[in-house]
Image 1 (cartoon, rainbow, N blue to C red):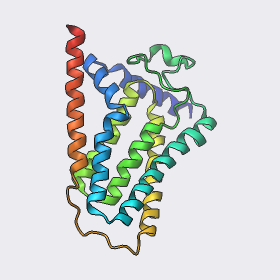
Image 2: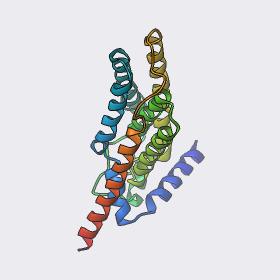
Image 3: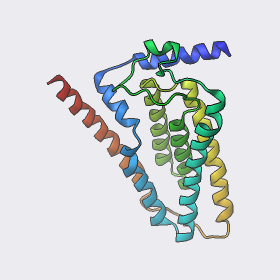
Image 4: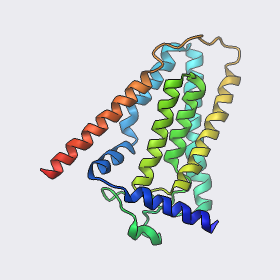
Length: 222
């Protein structure tokens, strides 16, 4: 266990030590929740556009259950038991060598990561439900980059992120099974229209974040 924790710490410090001012702005913004509202809205649009109201309702409810499961298992069940300090927490001995961005240190405990659980939960739910390769690939990249941003910001060990991802995938798997069971007698569409809308919206959001980071960098230098 001590060896695993040392590897976890070394990997965190390696990720956290690679820095640039542009990446600071980019990762800090990418790690935010509200910036992804357009992509969430696009996912909702695909659901409502293609499914009957009963299927849509069941899908929306089980997505909410996926996020609730992921968030509560991490924050309410496991964290109080594990009590693993975030790398950035001032009580953590390694906090002196962890670089932070905009003074952001997060809460006290970080194992497992709720960010990782929520993003992987949503990503795998869309993979299971929509079954579209380009969209699935984008959602996986989005979830992985979100996790990377958390380590980059120094608020989570890679082990926190891995554990959170496992919780999220488990939650998505269970909730998709509930969805399949609850809607087993309802007819599903054979094809989905505008299924790549979340990928396009998310991709444009990433581009906008990159442009925003560049503007912030130029403003700071000016």
